[in-house]
Image 1 (cartoon, rainbow, N blue to C red):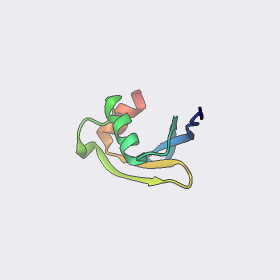
Image 2: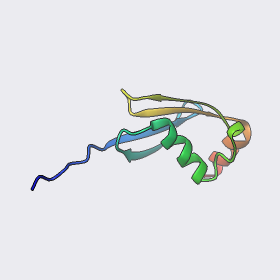
Image 3: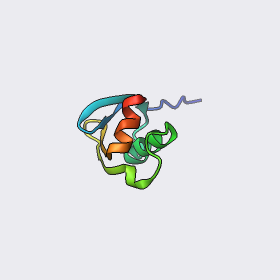
Image 4: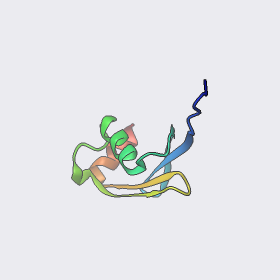
Length: 77
């Protein structure tokens, strides 16, 4: 019986150009992971809260820009 080994990496969500959140992920859809995490934590509540999101798979990070309201929620997080 062969054991499967899951390839996990440290994933960073950078919010408004600042290092913000680190988690472990399995190199799936980084943009969806970042957006979903911010949504489930109540930081992003609707699409207008998320100005932009871009994944950088070579650096295992996602760069997210939030509007002012969501940024205030993040600062309280």
